[in-house]
Length: 173
Image 1 (cartoon, rainbow, N blue to C red):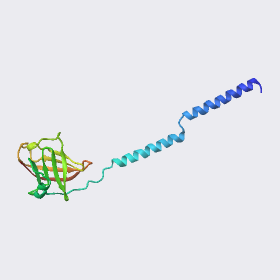
Image 2: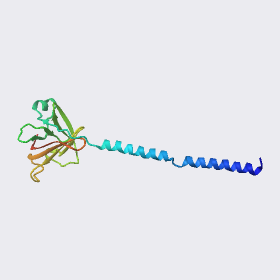
Image 3: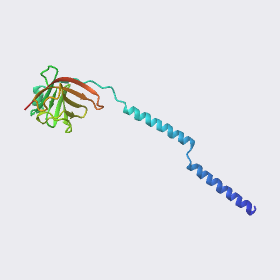
Image 4: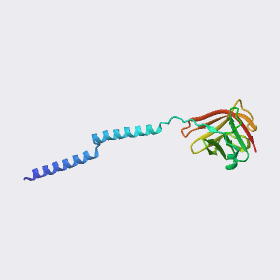
């Protein structure tokens, strides 16, 4: 083989090597389509995870004196009774609150950033499953009144109301 043919074949081999290396660096049309399909699948999963389940209503029950004794729920604070009931379904203290669901008393922690209520209590308490918020009803009222009309809203982890009731709050020691 002549020297010029040898140089030409070396150049041809180098050109083939360079073009194959360039092809490896450029995006494969199939990999671009696969990436788009993967992105769509990820978006669908994320959208499905953001869907809120429908709220499941709860029915708080009155906290009885026997439960107050059993769980040592004594102390200064407030009690919310729905409607014209005398049975409190929510007991609030300065750092905690209690709500009775079925046969268990659920504990909530005070939200220190919420509005102040009498005897060191606050308007919002947060638990593992629910959050409870008390709001005065019928005008501004006195935030230190020991008896006032209020509205209790309990929300689920998705901030959906699962219990709403108007009632009366009574505070004392």
